[in-house]
Length: 322
Image (cartoon, rainbow, N blue to C red; front, side, top):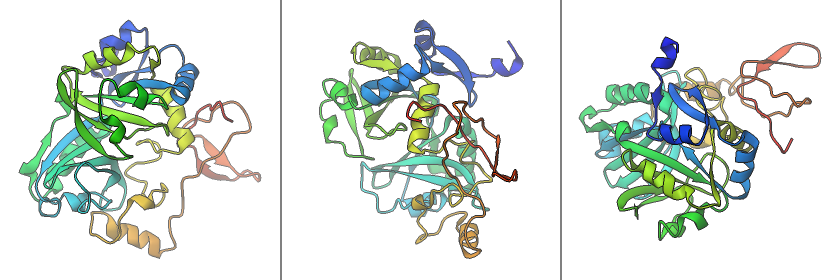
């Protein structure tokens, strides 16, 4: 085992993956399952039934206070002051040059209570950014280590969860609520990263294993790994931080301008407006289908017919639909 491998973290569900004979790979500083029975089988089951994804590696923060008074509103690109309680919104944290520090989802728990979900690989960096740039840094708490997270994704996800979580059918897209699940109050949001109907369950790290096992008792449910998730998110066109998003890629370049509210002030706004004023981004994200069955790799160059390099690949994967 190398020194790099020794520093990898494990989620509370790691032993469950080992017991299921999952293939484990490094991902963003974590040991994560890339597949169980097979990537394409897990992909197909997500599209036709429902699968479970271990997303315990994600980071979770709490911020207390008025979003403008605390400075939270100025840190994120999307409008949050008008969010109703039990709504959540996707957006980004930007640096002063308008590069993306991370993409995130903000949940409104109450008039002055905010729950924020960030990427696992950037949790420490994001926490430092919040503490440094909030007007009221004492209102910030990183609660990542105590949270367990499971994503239930697929067209049968609602049917499967309803007996365990009565009332879940009332959730509309990008809303959440608290429910009782196996004797614990959990947060469930109707969100996901697959393009299918799906829900994300936030529990304590202590009880996430019991929830995982209970869900897998249903024969319609199977576990799925990073390999299936990558195909699913690419088919929908969802960005992955470190690929389509980075501190040198702006929201305009990433095709995410719809998640930027230019009517408010936020860090990076001036640089974005300058990019717009100068005719828009000189590079942009675009999807393409390869003429071969070999998936292009990240950083592969893209050439036009004359042989000139015109871009690079950010993500590539096989898709059963291509």
